[in-house]
Image (cartoon, rainbow, N blue to C red; front, top):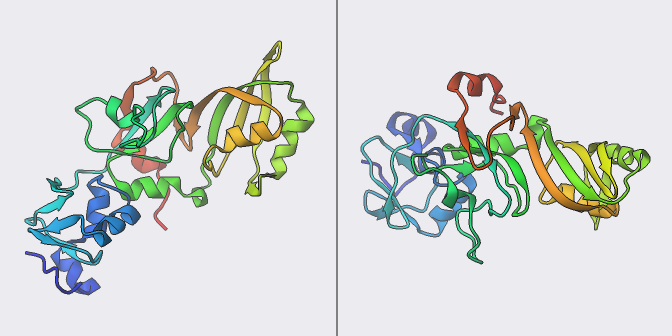
Length: 253
C-alpha cells in the first residue's frame, strides 16, 4: 500500500510504482498538469485517503478515486484519428450546455483526451489518446509538426497578401509565427485557401484571416503532423496502429 504522508524519493518510487500525477495522466483522466491541480484541490483519493502531493506513488494493488469515481489502471497507450464535425465543443463539459466531442464518441472507446482543440465551428482531424502525457507531447510546438487546414473565406485575397504571412503577423498584440497560405480555388467572392502552420494557437487561423479582411465560412483541419484526415467519414473514429504510432511519435524530451 502506498504511503500518502511523505512523498517518497525517486529511488524508492521506482520500486514502489508510478507518481500519481503521471499515473492519472496515463489513465486518461487529465493531463499531468491538470492532474496536479486536481490533487491540490483534494479531489483524489488513494486507498480511501485524500492525496495532495503529486510525488505520491501508486502501486499495482492500490485503489485510486477521482471525484468519487474509481479510476481503472492505465491501459496501453492508444491513439485515434477522429473526424470532428462542426457544432461540437472540444471539452468534456461545456458550461453553456452545448454538445461536445466526447458525448458523441462511440461508447466502446476508452476514456480519451484530445490533442489540442478545434473550436465549435471548425471541423476535420482531431487526435485523441488515452494517455494524457502523450497528448501533452503532441501539442508542443517544439515538435515542429505542421498543422494543415483548408479554409473557405469570403473576400478577395491576393498572392501578396497571403505571401506576407510567411514572415509572421501580429494581431491585437498577439504575435503569430510564420504561416504558409496559398489560394486553391476562387468562385465569385468565395475562395478556398490552404493554410499550414506549426503553433496552432487558439483560433489562430480565424484571427489571422480576419486581420486580412477575410471572413472564414468553413475551416477544416486536414492533417496534424504525420497524421492525415484522408477519407475518414465525418464523425468516425479510427485507431492508429501501434506500430505506426511508435514510428511517428516524437522522442520524449
